[in-house]
Image (cartoon, rainbow, N blue to C red; front, top):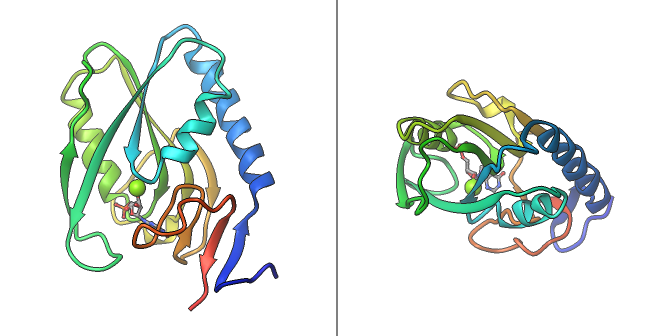
Amino acid sequence: MNSKNGLRVLVARTEIESTVKKLASAIARDYRDKNPLLIGILKGSFVFLADLVRQLDFPLEVEFVRLSSYGSGTQTSGKVKLEQEPKVAIKGRHVLVVEDIIDTGITVDFLMKYLQKKKPASLKLCALTDKPSRRRVHIRIDYKGIDVPNEFIVGYGIDRDEKHRNLRDICIIEE
Ligand code: IMP
Ligand code: MG
């Protein structure tokens, strides 16, 4: 179904849109008067974060961090490095980390521990997609979108080798 150019639609744009709205209303309930700092993890979260903030009609701020896991191929090596640190103060802020996909959990686990040391007023996680079958460390996802199977997904910001970030649907690459 919907297979073209080796891509099969897993989550159609309409389902992404309703998921983003559902997440935004939960976030709005909890953060309306808190001027939260939303921290997107580059690059994958940029499309999701852009859509998410436009569903939030209260004061907030946006920051980005960039992480890399060095190793080979599409697997997380287990060693994470902060390539671009947050430039704004974290202390005393209500921080919400926004991620595209939680896979092994290693990347986000590293970031949450790093941010916690900076003494935020609160620290939570929002993830559009979750691949729970691959988890290697326990992660609490406070605002979770869609569970995805153990397949490599692309689109809506998510890439493989920098390609397919511009797809409007989340797709599986069929080899
Ligand atoms: P983790 O540290 O294993 O949780 O890896 C998370 C990161 O790996 C995500 O932010 C993505 O950049 C990347 N990743 C994991 N699974 C996929 C996938 O299916 N497609 C594209 N990138 C993925
Ligand atoms: Mg990512």
